[in-house]
Amino acid sequence: MDKTTIKAIIDDQRNYFYSGSTLNISTRIAALKKLKSCITHYENRINMALKKDLGKSSVESFMCETGLVISEINYMLKNIRRFSHEKMVHTPLAQFCSKSFIKPSPYGVVLIMSPWNYPFLLTMTPLADAIAAGNTVILKPSAYSSYTTEVICEIINKCFDKKYVSVITGGRSENACLLNEHFDYIFFTGSQSVGKEVMKHASYNLTPVTLELGGKSPCIVEKSANIKIAAKRIVFGKFLNCGQTCVAPDYIYCDSSIKDALINEIKKQIKLQFGTDPLNNSNYGKIINEKHFNRLLMLADTSKIIYGGRYNHSSLKIEPSIMDNVTFNDAVMQEEIFGPILPVLTYNSINDAICKINSLPHPLALYIFSGSRRIAKKVITLCGFGGGCINDTIIHLATNEMGFGGFGESGMGAYHGRDGFNTFSHYKSIVDKKLWPDLPMRYQPYNSFSNRLIHFFLK
Picture (cartoon, rainbow, N blue to C red):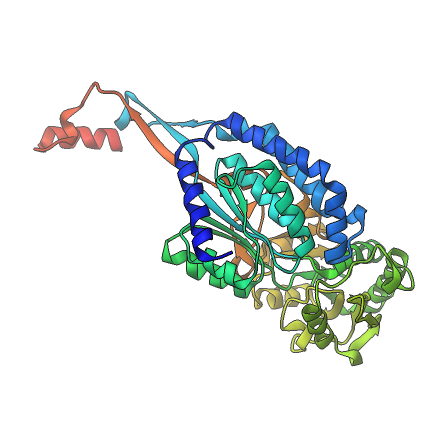
């Protein structure tokens, strides 16, 4: 799509927004209901698209994508009227005979740029939040997940006029065109390198942004942890979507005294969950494309792989693999892995582990497995990270009652549930002042009497 067409769509959306058509709460509710109905109707098509793009099973597709989108829409439908209410606040004595309130208002024309690893979830969830808040939206899905993008286009075109919600397809040239335009809000999910470019371009128009990035999310296994439960939940979180999850445990950081026992349990769990031949398991996903497949093979030091390591180039599958004797200087520890390779590193004391994690860029997630509530609380209190779990992985992002987002190098801002509505809303602070009485003390010329009155009211 060329620059002129993109600009015309943005202009049409801005005109539509300023017409006030998206402000009516009933209109927003009707739009969300229509979107939900269409997603339900297209569920099989969505499953097939995700299978082609990422090799996801229908169960995983609903559990991790379609079902979570429907859950978010349901939450907004249940709460949108309450979220949209003006909130009365206390008015100070100096402003008596007036009322003060906070009014949630949509930003306007919103750009949502989504990634390929959860292409349906990470496009439609922020879309639902943005619609609920009253914005018009331009969606830019990833070019890598082309089958899912095709279904998204069909759903959006069936549900919305382009002046309300529109999809821009394409690759880098379309991304560049969009980022050179003026939006009222930009919501980006993707890599840190592209996130920096998004923030740079947004700064030209002082456009507010939410950046949902990634990072190397540590999974700490403390010596008092339940090893069997830890291994089971780590294997689920790490190898879900073939490791292509922004909050997957990137590496294990365990007490040296339990390393061997933990590795043995992880091996058992891989066999239990994926079988002895994961490459031929139809429910085990694939790498998105050859570029990322080759990148992962470069990160996997074969001399340190103690389990797995096999791959199939034609199907773009890499089996769940464990690396031992890894250091923070190894290639696999220099970037987010984003694949089914699990390095295991050790520490000698939990204080050393906390210090090391805090010396690294802030991760999107952190997981701590421990039988000690005191130690678990210490880790989540002292370490800097976006969100996480105690004695589990991944599941913190699957609730509408908590915001999900990054911190520092892993992003800024949050969404899901109330936080999603807040993200796409500007909160106006309003004082509604009566015409009388109109006290003279604030007007010049000032004198000793007005000075005493001002001190009385403001102290």
